Image (cartoon, rainbow, N blue to C red; front, side):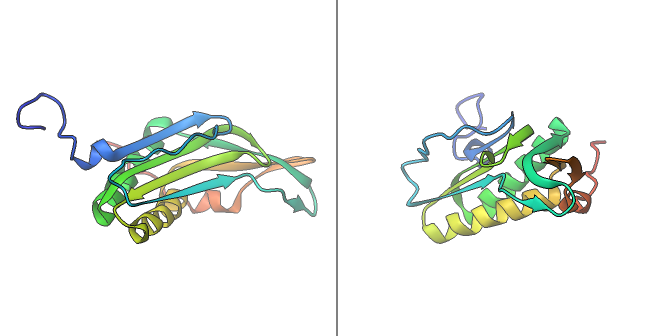
Amino acid sequence: MHPDADEPDPGHPSMKIHVALEDGPLSRRDVEGPTSAGGECVFLGRTRPEEHPTHGVLEALDFEAHPSLATASLERIADELVRRHDLEGLSIRHSRGRVPVGETCVEIIASAGHRDAAFLACRAAIDRLKKETPIWKRECWADGRTWSPSTSSIKSPELPK
């Protein structure tokens, strides 16, 4: 807490973090990070075109998530990365629901004093999100649906006590 207020200290890492789960494809937005940041790194993950030998052309990805567990995981990841890389800000947004080919399903923006920290944090954020966050991906093909092979590798989240 800020010493003279009942509000969190603006310098506390949690004040530099934004995480969100949003329905459908993510809309593009202007990136306007903190003016104190010398470097910002933006990662956009999109549903890419693919073809399956049995199911044909990929039409979309369908993401499922447990909202409170996924949000808690993203907040934990963001908090750790803000501290480790001394970031000025970190935003992580991920889609829920159907995201057609060509549309954005994940956005990460890391703002830091220097570009190296921003690049490292952005890469670490997407890698950890894919391994640690309970978001499941189903592939929607022209002829059927399959769970993504990466879905099964997500660890079971620890439930709050």
